[in-house]
Image (spheres, one colour):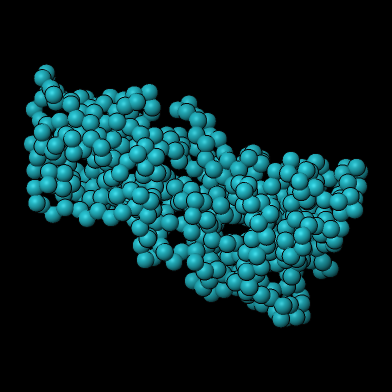
Length: 541
């Protein structure tokens, strides 16, 4: 028998599917044939594998070689299969024992010199292998710390095909050192998210300085902190409410009022990700190839700030070949900040509506359909008009009322109906900035209040899958968490006269629960529902 088998993983979105790799070395015209619904990168594996095997000082079989990737109906893409193909081939040729390689999973790309190179998506691939009952997974050295996040799994890091063959044969060559899954991440990663520091600036504008000489612009490289923002006490309070309940936020105001500074400091108020959520977030960034070097586990909520020229594929997800996660998925568990929101394409803005409701996004292409998680906090920032100049004596706004309406109408009603908190920011005077400095609080202090509020919500939701008030479903809001008639009266009046939609009513109720949690109250009263209504309408109450 000249057939050998081993296993690998095929990724579809962030979901891994086990693939059996079979190699047959038999009689016939010499040649190498790969079958199993492969893309171009995988079809080129025959040349990479051949060079890697020869340069690792092993003979290439002078025979007909057939390599099959099963199931054949599953589209397979990328170079993650290289090591599995090479090992199956060497096992079929008798170089390594067939029974030794059969139960193992092999992940990695081969260089022409036989080196094993890191690949994207190792964490979801290893999770799929563990779900299939794997006990040992062989991965590139560069992906070992990421793979070791999966518990109860032995990870074998390899740097070259020659070292891997020596370990499989047990011939006394230098072998890779295995370490158990679930081991602590590398030193640089374990500290991530353990304090109230700034988020990782994944593809965003997290390093920009804030505006204004008295507005608290931080020097380059310093950690953003909420105490940097002066002159906007109401906006800081709104930011705290959004962090405590996971609510969406819209900020409207002229340049220099602190909109970007506030958005960048929102992640510093959020608690660290829970372990299962951190694994999910890390898996998404692993597939996208955006994991920071030396930080295999993302323990802090991510922060994404795409440019206003971003396309639907960049924001929602997609691509012409491999379907990649977009900004809405890369901000899963964290914050998606859209600065200069009216400058985005209306199709991009309207495409946000579905993930805001469902917490996931489904991308359909001719190659198939992929679903990515996308539960994020949306922060929109906008100037009041295209010229962005405040109207005041001596320097009037140059925009006509029609131009103002057209500019802000790019943010559609259905989109704004999904935004829980709306804040208007005005330019503060020098006296207001100096006076407010005495009342600013550091992010750590506010984050402690946010954590206590979230703990109250978690206690209330014990046994349910909701993590914060923003995730509370409509049915629960109007049954077990229904408020007394007196507290509901202001909201029902607005619902009757058309100021509130049914969706808006639910969002106001969720914000009211968050305000009550921050005040350490058992349930919202009239004061909390009025305050939540004012935040939804964009009025200070």
